[in-house]
Length: 355
Image (cartoon, rainbow, N blue to C red; front, side, top):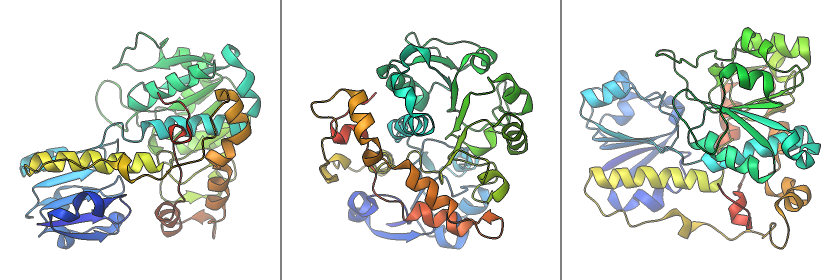
């Protein structure tokens, strides 16, 4: 069996080496010629898995170690009778922790705001619902919006309710351009104008959910604090946008070691089901021990004392800004930051809570 895998997948050899030859390649530039004689293809969100890539191949399985599926042409996969799987929820905990870390970096006093701070969450799937749970552990008020999901334990309102009420808004929706509730440019000039002028905006979902031109105008007009991990024209980021953002990271919100490993394990399980193999391996047997930062302390005490040691988000911001060249961050620099991303662990590895 031949397996073609994105070179940045975690634990690929551990999970898949026993099945045959693994060829690890750059995911963003995969070609039909590289996958035509493969039995399985393992990707991340940077690989468009479309008709041009998969037609007239030997592929029997495509696994994407990601939450989203907007890079997968599911109709083409099913037309060619290729089994496929994503890894829904694999890095949801990491993204929830990223959002809280970003908020505490932008406004450290939020640690003591309790119910006086309202976090608005747009999208209450795997990530949004976990973020709501973690935010409540800090005593924050939560107001969510999701036209497809109802949670008994999360207060929900209309999209407009969240815009006008929340002190910070975090986006956790897939990118869709059709249907009753498309999310493409969901945050346009009108939506941004509906937010509190001093409300923080965080997007760690998909870049094009926020209209970049409208966002630039909004920041210039209102001096809004904005955190972006994803970008409408990703991987290229203009100097104009970069210089207006309070915090910026290279699409790594979900890049905890656990999130990466969990994603690979989930597509390994689907792979084993497709090829009738025993899925006996577990990622948690491969992870090193961490310093117990949360031991003998409250959550707020641990975060106040050790948050930058648990996750130094300022480092990610500085590293991305350092890649600015001739007015923009280019694709190669962006991809290199992701490929060489330093080890980051989830709070639970340090003895902390999980949703």
